[in-house]
Amino acid sequence: MSPTCEGYLSKRYAARVDANQREIVEALRSHGAFVHNFGKLDLLVGYNGLWHLLEVKDGDKPPSAQKLTKDEIIFILEVENRAPIHLVRSVREALDVVGITAEIG
Image (cartoon, rainbow, N blue to C red; front, top):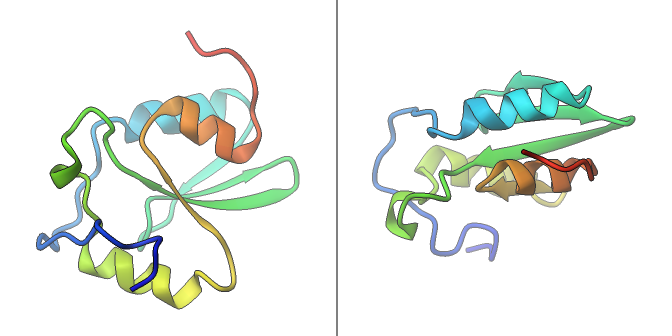
């Protein structure tokens, strides 16, 4: 199994939105990023001429509650050699991934 996925497999398969996803989307959009709920992963983010795939997990939850679902892992394995997928657990991590260095408050 890919190091990207190792330790993150979850037995739950139902689609859920992590509690911090709305805050992350709002922060990205407030800095001019295009953000689309992507489906197989959480977010497709376009910023400064580049596209980023983000999987959002709630960093306030224990690691056992941040596991990737089977569908997420399958998708990651299908595309990981073609495009990076970033696992983010906070607004700061999401902003860093897309290259936004602004202070958050």
